[in-house]
Figure 1 (spheres, rainbow, N blue to C red):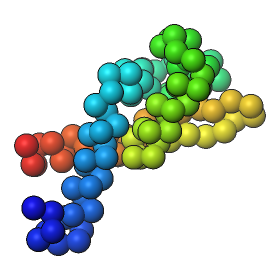
Figure 2: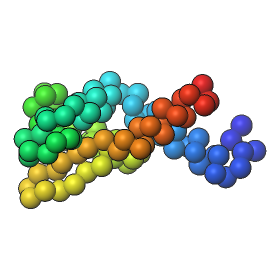
Figure 3: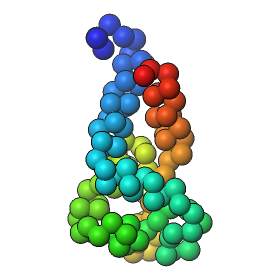
Figure 4: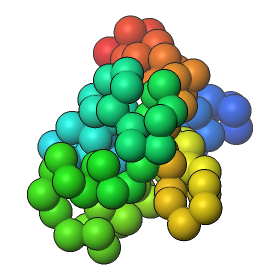
Length: 107
């Protein structure tokens, strides 16, 4: 039970649980996978994608894409940067590695 765990461990478990909830959705897993692909950004970035690119590839409305991106951003799996009128997203590779490490160590 989490109550008897040290605070740092309990916080790590909570972060892991939040990340699992975020990637439980197949659309969000697809977005994370797409963000790994090089050269897919119409803003001419070498990695990541702008929101319009994600919207076009997933064929969902802009508000739905924004919701998915907010969930991924809130748990730290992606980073967002405003460039002019566009939002550019990229994976937070350290957070993705941390999630994978958590799986290996605890499951």
